Image (cartoon, rainbow, N blue to C red; front, side, top):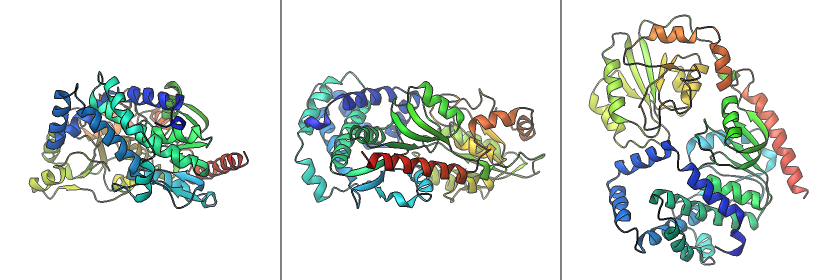
Length: 426
C-alpha cells in the first residue's frame, strides 16, 4: 500500500470487514456458494491444506489485483459519482437520480476484463507484495474472510486513487457491509467527499460502522438498526411507500395464486417440500416462484421444468411489485419482499428454513408484522392475522405508507444539492 492509502481508514475498514463477516447469514451464504460449485470446493479444500505455505498469499494477491482492476473510472471527474454492482442496488439509486439530473452524475462501473488505464495504475503499487504478509497475519481466520479483507483493500486502493485524481462533490452508494461498498465509503470520506447511502432492503446485523452525510433507509425499524449498530447518519429519510399501499382484502378468492419469493441462498429441500405441499391443496391454482436477482441455486430453473406441472412457473418481471400484484398470497423466508407484499395488500407468510439464514433474521415474526407459516395450510387464518386491530401500526414501523416516494425523493434531491454545493465551495 502506498503511503496515501495507509492510515486509520484502512485499519478501520479491515476491522469492519471482519466484524460484518461474523454474521451467521454471511457464513450460510459462503458455505452455500461453495456447495454449488465443484471448483470452489476444490479451492476451499486446497487452501485449508496449504494454510502455512505461500499459496494463500498468492491467491490473496490475485484477489487484490482483480478487485483493483475491476473498477473503471467514469466519463468525467467532477459532479456526483455513484456505484452499483447488483441490479437491486442499481434500481434503488437510479430511481433517485431521476429527480436531480443537474448534479452531473458519473458511474464507476465494474468490468471483468482490465483496461490499459487500470493496468498502468496497478504497476505503481507495491500492495500485492504486502498482501502476502497480511494473509499470513490473518490466517487464524477462515480464508473467505481473509479474501474479503483483501478484496476490500483492492477496492479501497483503486477508489482512493480515483477520488484523489477527481473533484467529485458527492458520492452515492447502496451497499455497505461488503468489500466494494465499505471501500467506496471510506475512500470518499478520506478525500472529503460527502457520502449518501440509498438502501435497497433491510440491513443485516452486524452493520458496518460507517459515517454518512445522508441516508435513505428502508423503514423506521431499519433506521433504528443503523443507530444501534453504531452508524452515524446526519440526515435520514425513509423510502415512501404510499404509492404501493393497498389495504388488506376482506376475503380471499376461492382459487389462489401463491407467490414464493426467494432469497439468494435457497434451501432446495425446504422449497421442494413447500411446493409439493401447496400443489396438493385444492385451493391453490397456481404457484409463481420469484428468484432473487443474485440467485445462487444453479438448478432452480431445471427443477421447475422437471416438475412438468402447468401450475408451477417462474416469474419473468423485473419489478417486485408487479410480481406481488400478480399473486394472492406471498410466501418467503428472510427477505424484505415480505414487507413489499403486505404493503401491497397481499397476505404474507414467513417460512422457516426457506434459506440458510437464522430464523426470523429481520424480526418480522417477532414484531408481529408477518404471519408465521406452519406446515398446515390455513389462508383464512393468515388473512385474519392481518385484519387484527393494531397491525397497521406495526406495518408503519416497517413501511412508510404515509408518504409518497416522489415526495420523499424531492426532499432527498434538495438535500443532495445542498451537500454537493457545500462540498464544491470548500
